[in-house]
Length: 301
Image (cartoon, helix red, strand yellow):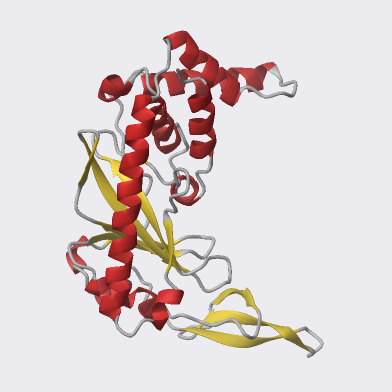
């Protein structure tokens, strides 16, 4: 039976597709249209902590986080306003995680990579607790299997710092800069995919060797841990042998596809917290892909 595969953000945030690119409507629908302010922090004895302030929602005083007094607040509308000037982008989701990441997810027109359709997504983010920068993360999604490629290949950065762009004279200039950066990333992504498709893997036994080397621990593990590790390897091999990966089997690109499938769709608990954690880890913290590709490339002919 074919697995049901979706992007990790399907079960997170608020669907805002009916809002178009109207940032104010998006923020209102996703309940992100609040104002952030700073507030002094006092101990129970009345002593004020001078080197720290709290960020709060001005409307109801809800606590957000603790930052330095010089921390610069970017209201959600200010951080995301330039999105309305990006042509051909569809904003699909918006939300806020339990860790304070405020985000919008947009889709740009499809790109063809090795005769495969990829959907370039851009995740715009900000926060009000000092944990996250104001930036955009490019996340190509392989359409046929909904695999997320959220890491940078080689020297190609998949993150764009938005804060410096705020000094540009117009919102249109900000939008144009982001589109240029995204276009350059996708061109580099395509080149990397083509290079990896040229790196051949000798046999299925070699694939097993690569999987074993990546997942096996140098430390002694219990029988229970070993069984869990074997399940991971088995699921990875299932990803590698999927029909939609047949054309690329026997190449490092086929292994990269399998790894992204594994990371995006590996079994997880179906809870709000687990869904959100999967979205965060796969989208923003998937350095394992680069490590795996480097390992697989070392076995290539």
